[in-house]
Image (cartoon, rainbow over all chains, first blue to last red; front, side, top):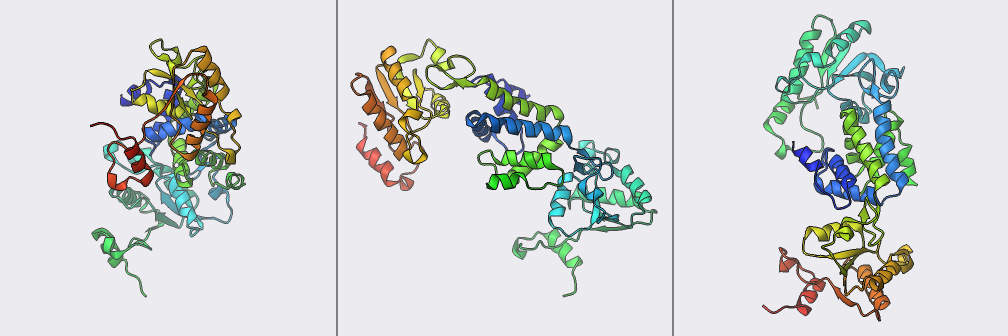
Length: 208
Length: 208
């Protein structure tokens, strides 16, 4: 409703500029002021630069789809990680979103493969287990004789709940289930750690 | 050079995503991290929303051009302000960019018209007076019997220099030349005003 009003807002340069500001302002973290600044940049930049941005947006939506094995994003049938013969297909790290894959890959620590759930179970938002790729994960576990599932859902109430649900579903398949270690974050300060973090760190203490 | 390297950077989701991140990162104030976040939003948002953004960018470049009178931006022959019969065509406020027009219009204080120079004289950047719309302003002053020119270039060395150059060019046309008042900014604190601001404020002191 408020977005509609916004779109109809008048701009002295014409309706096209008002629409562009509106579209920019729909992007996450982009407020009205920034949207105006970006629109002014588009107005003043070379035509080729603007065309390249528009084309890049179109191309991404036209070519990027879900990997048919792990539901990560890719421009091919299977994603780069599933296609890689060096990656261990019997170890599967379960994450909520494709972005989580990118983040974990940056650590260069993991030699297995991933499974992207497409979100987390959240009854309040109307997201039940049937909206996630849980059935596909179960099939994959059986087909590829997966040995270990690493739960890497977010350390939130809903992420933990989703992991718990998954562990119930996978019980009886014989797969080993682990989850990411919890504790104090490297580079942080004890003083600012909250109760839950410190409890996790104490429970999971390791031999020095 | 560094932009080129950046574009060739690898992204696990494919080259299209790398290109989109690169294009977003070329926008002013958008760093690598924000560009990635925006690209992930485009990947996950509805296809229509992404198409609307791409189309808005294309449409703006296709339909917006310079007003033939004042070089403000418009989707018609003349801009909204020049077309408005209530605006006084004998008072012309000279600004550097179309954005300055939007900013000044927001104050709703001015009933005259504008002239957009298209920048400021800056020998170091290779911008001489011939690259600005100075000749067009001189013609306009004669044609429309302009009575007053308000210099509203930025209060910088180059903005002031451009205003000085203009005042020399327009000498002898009989037009009245003024400039925006300078002093302390409403809502600011004297403690944080710099030397130049305070000197301007003292020189321009008004009767209480």
